[in-house]
Amino acid sequence: MVFQRISSEAETLPYDDDQEGLSGQIVFKFSHVVAENTPKGQAADKFAELVYEKSDGAIQIVVFPNGSLYSDIEEINALKDGQVQMIAPSTSKLTRLSEKWGVLDLPYAFTSYAAITEGIHGPLGDELLKSLEADGLKGLAHWPSGFKQLTSNKGPIEKPEDLAGQTFRIMQNDIIQSQFNLLGATAKQESFNFTYNLIEAGEVDGEENTISNIYSKKFYTVQDHMTITNHGYLGYAVMMDQDVWNQQTDQTQRILLEAMNETTAWNDENAQKLESEQLQLIKEKSAIRIHELSEKDKLEWEEKLAPVYAEYADAIGAGLLQELAALQK
Ligand code: LMR
Image 1: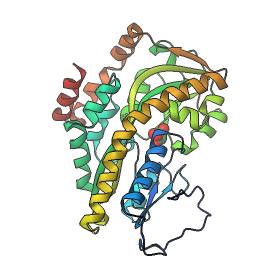
Image 2: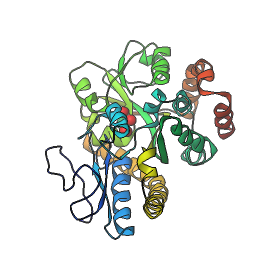
Image 3: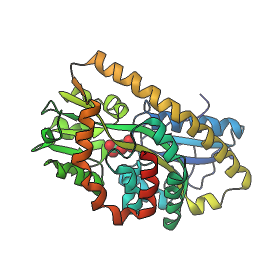
Image 4: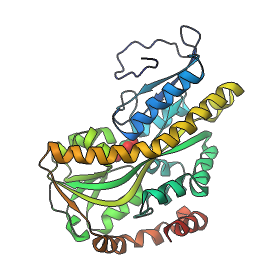
């Protein structure tokens, strides 16, 4: 093994706090909240491998998965405080930095993987990454994961009105909250790492997430129904603290960027591959009942959720909304 992944806080770390490894390496801690067998988990590991190779072992990315260091909101503060040097939060959690990010949370913002790739790696995605500068952060890349699906113990969920009266765990994001409220559901904004327990304890009926998170965190084992709605985008913005970035030599910056670009291109394919493999595994391993919305059903969901666009138009801004509309044509 050429790079390290630390899975528990208790393990002894082979470096001190000033980014100098015991053998003189530069060490960057990369914290994230999901499992290793997800698009983000695999991309973080791939990035670590590439950086290690390209620097002949002089730069080490130590990946901390599963929220083993920090939960989702904590990790943004930990990055700013210099406790970790890299994070890749879901973009939905960045609306607390700038409401612009909410453009990616709009219902059915993207309707295909091709549209995701075009939008996220085009001017829309670039403008969002650049907006991180205002918070002293260096946006390095977008790593899309895919589309969100709904799971619940009260189902089946076929029509938008089937959500009425149900309670869902959602990410910390008001646009998502508005969508659930619009359909008569209650939404609880809670940390990702509490989701399984909330479902198991019956404190929520369901949640929304990618297939990879539903699979790797075993939500499918505590939920009776899943609906393939593809109703929202879920992806990650990889970032560092701007000052930490500026302190790196040109050579280190070049290696990090090269490895990041290669990882990003790799993730675009890997995320889709993992999603279809893990959907198959969920079907094989469990009795969860899966309902897939037809194209006609989807139009009904889109129509019911459409008022969210007007509600958040000012917060997101006309420019980004126009870019999104161009992608939706
Ligand atoms: C969630 O909080 O549901 C997910 O966005 C977590 C993640 O990073 O994929």
